[in-house]
Image (cartoon, rainbow, N blue to C red; front, side):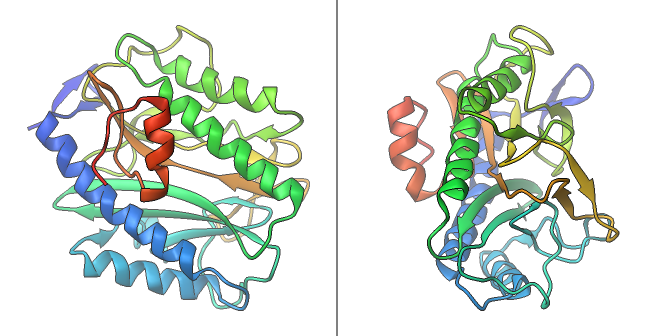
Length: 274
């Protein structure tokens, strides 16, 4: 079974990492299905039904459904919604929207968690830019996940890239997390930080890296539903996430999708097996 370092951080064996990759493949396939399904006129509840069917058909269980009372199998966050949007029949997608889809699955006790932001039709120039900046900042954070580095190196890599790209808001109060036999575990992974700060990164750690980037300020408010987080200024937001294991060969992307193959190869990361 798993080991622990500092009492709160779960470490996985190579065999356990492969079991997490199996859960991650289900999440990846579900997100591929959802990306292809997104079109004007769909509701976020339509997407939720597709996700639940995909996860259950693969022999897994949706991580989100019932989690602290959450009603969906995905989080579906549209336009100014940053994270934790509740799927519903009233939210109808329109041409030009963007939607963050966050998906989790449990397979034989192991979790996978990943998110993408998808344009409904052709995105506006500013929306395309914030999506690209957010996704690349995620990859910068992933690349910092190497034995011998520290937790702050991840946040520094994410934040410094976002800052280099112009006036975008990096949401600071939400972030990534450890993942394994539970969806949310220690450590909390900030999307900002100092080089060389924080706990050491060691082989066997599995972390979900998930920046949230706004077209406007970084500030947010939570809606009365107790879940949905929106930008305070109404600007649109993007969100990307991968679950990643620290291995001697480098960061292994556990929720890698086929479309990530070229990026992973270009970065020289371990092949997750597509």
